[in-house]
Length: 320
Image (tube, rainbow, N blue to C red):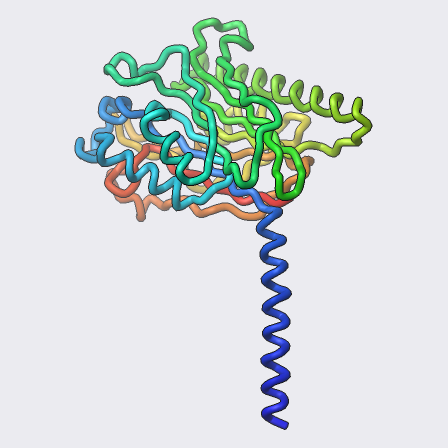
């Protein structure tokens, strides 16, 4: 009797294991992992006035491999990067080797140029095994959208299809105006408004196209990533939270920080990087990877030997 019970128990565990495995595979097919990271441009690292950072940790030969290691370990399906200026010779070939495709969106002018380094911008990658583009990825300078022709910041818009579940996803990656002053905050707020206006128009046009073909479309999945250069209490973040698409932050807005550095002007330790998702869309938030603590980073802040950027990487899992 005891042997019989043991065999029966073993059979049940095996049966249960097969069922769990199938559920896990199905769950995996319905998940999207997204990474957001300002990688700190080559040139801005060496001339970024990082008071407590050894110069050897700021050179590309030290930082490049560590940046790539962080991206690789994140194992994301969609990767949004800012302050990229080693795209053609570094990020693109390595990302393609790992099964990604993407596009670089250069700023029309970049502070990197004053130090003799290439122009920086945003780069958006997606895993080709899972996704295909439904339309060419758009690269837009905010000067094209707003009144300020001097705006050098850019955004990318990707319209993707998840081949595993035949569902569509809009992804935006952006880097907003820097500097902590009222004029810059006003400009960032206007950039957010213009970005969301463009995004809403893209969604509306897609819905009309589908409906014209007799397809009734649900609210699309929408994810917005970026270095917003502003804190959760700002009017910039309020503009995101108050939008009709119902944006929510993947990470709690009142916990931790995404950048921490010591410069001549003082210490900056704040949340300014975000992964947003439209709560009323077809995807929901599943989980997020924890952010590094001040203790794990060390008293000298970012970047350092272990953390190659002055920003932390954000990684969130979503589910259809």
